[in-house]
Image (cartoon, rainbow, N blue to C red; front, side):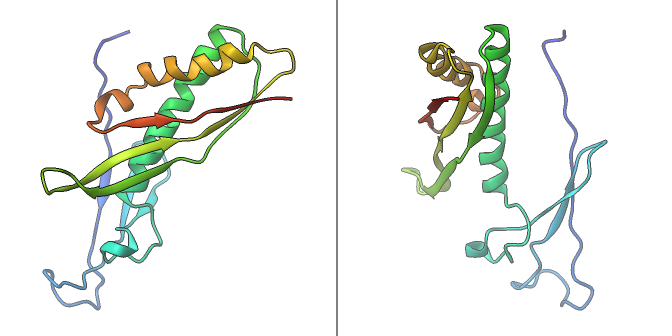
Length: 156
């Protein structure tokens, strides 16, 4: 496998035909997000930044990327170590705020994965795999803010 990989995406924005010409402070923040071979999803800005709330915003997409990357890395580790994962759910949150530099940025992301494992599974391993997943998540390794983890492991 190559050490480098490229990923292509498209962001498409068009003004509302009834709107004033851009730049209008009330311009639509709605857009379409796509990648080759995938159905498009709709994006917008958060309501607090004049979006209408109908689409995913960049802050949610970044949080989703961190959560999904952690999950996929965790599941890969669990599969290699024969941990019987029955279900995985994460309720992640992100905090956006003003950094010491005075610029707005993501201050931290908290992942709260709830992992259901088969009865008799090694719960210590199930918990430790989260540390390994965090250390090996490509997206978490690419950001300049803390990504914290508060996993819950449940036997079922």
